[in-house]
Length: 109
Image (cartoon, rainbow, N blue to C red; front, side):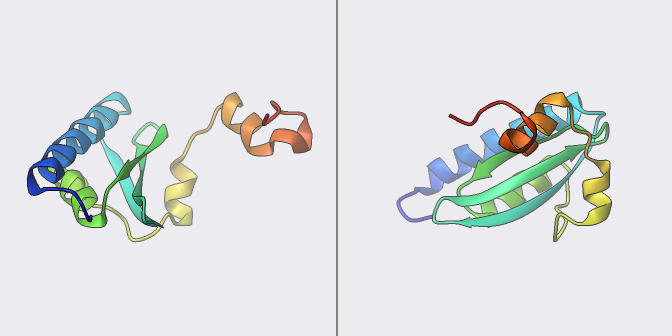
């Protein structure tokens, strides 16, 4: 990523690895992941834990994201496909936010 030094990239990678490892540990001991390019802001890493819990985080670039995942023992999938989506467990909050204004969920104001 332009403007990032090797040292700051390494620090970012270590921070991502810690967050990914902590997520996996908190959600059944393992996780699966996808990496999606989001434009100039970098890439989005979506994690799905063994218990179906999910979360995401941003990385400055795909290489940093993939290296952090590898260091955490996770090989990213190519796509967020139907089998991975079927593992995701959502709660009341997600359902109300996804439906939002359509079915009387919290207002997005």
